[in-house]
Amino acid sequence: MKKRLFAFVLLNMMLLPLGLSACAPAASTGETTAVTDKPENSVTAGSTAAVTTTAEPPKSEPEVSLEGKTIVWLGSSVTYGHANGGVSMAEYLERTAHCISAKYAVSGTTLVDNGDNSYISRMKKIPADQKCDYFICQLSTNDATQKKPLGKISDSFDIDSFDTSTVCGAIEYVIAYAKERFDCPVAFYTNPPYDSTEYRRMVSSMLKIKEKWGIEVLDLWNNEELAAMSREERDAFLKRNMADSIHPNALGYRRWLTPIFEEFIRKTIVK
Image (tube, rainbow, N blue to C red; front, side):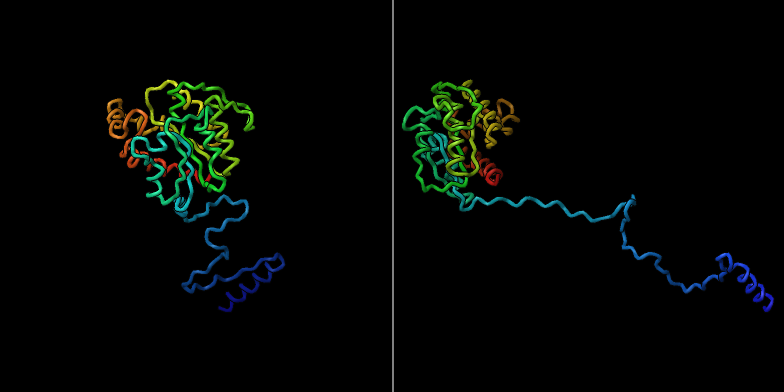
């Protein structure tokens, strides 16, 4: 024992000048000692180690309430509710969404400014104190039926530059006026498809005007639900929901169009 102790001391004396030491192994206590004070999953600069995190589930967008909101409707017979006793989606929305519908609709009238009952003339007569949180205008079928000139989309945004004797000029005037007057989201809606080359051209121009002005369009003419049906299915669907080729019946307004309009307005009123 004395020989082993003497040899150990001698070895340490020889190694000390070199900055080394011969140490006996520490006795095990049966406990595990931490070798780092870094938190778990920490990553130092330049490290490629992955950090494990628990992702939160995506949050769904809260549903926009229309309760108490005032929607101003400008249109003709479809907006009025011609084949349903003057009741349209405007009134049904008041019941389902608890909003307020201010409806300025006269059957047989046109967008083209051709008299006291035109869209533009009536729009200018809307009372000064009319509240409006959302403005929606019908792309009138009467302009197509009466073969009003389609006109061209202007390069200007100046309200005084639009040719309101044409459909495109009248549409642009309505948009410019509504934006300036009400300072709220502006939208148009089209009719469901029917046999009219003139109205098809109006819808095509309407979609281009939408891009120019950054407004919204509820495009029932190109409705995906109808487009997915066969010709026979579509004809049967429209027969159930339409009083004629242009005007919805009570079922069409209540069960088909009202939910579509409600969803559309909820999505676009915040823009």
